[in-house]
Image (tube, rainbow, N blue to C red; front, side, top):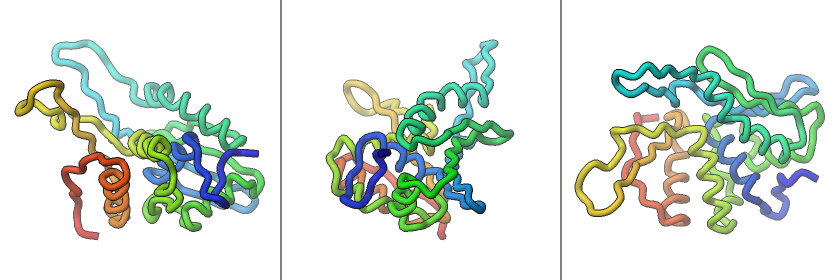
Length: 202
């Protein structure tokens, strides 16, 4: 039986990672008897510039596909359905197709309170009752689908020892409740400092 379960609040590392991906950029679709879980990875989140005077060139769709191979394998083993990597002009999608109303599909949609899109998802409540390492896997999934490390966020001056890289979790401003919930998870549960919550008015 697939590991996705919510009846007793059970989450393992793979489930938590998948929930992080879905929370960041996931959507559930139902078309007749076909159900699809689609996770977007927009290219604008992964713009890379080669060093000055370098002849290096980046093929973002190809690099994205290579990066997502391991993610696809992990999700495929968990859900036991076909999971495809689908590139397009502005993004690459991870698409899981359910031909039946499986237990995995039912539990995933239940964990998100039957909401259908990352524009309205909140953090699954079961996430706050699991060990720290499971919560960290959720944050890893959230970051993999929503973070763009930037040189401007690298600590340049001020303190002794290794410099730190600030990480910006990008959340669509239509879902203005989610940043508060993520902040609570990071600061209260994981003791990870949050410097700012920035964004426009909902």
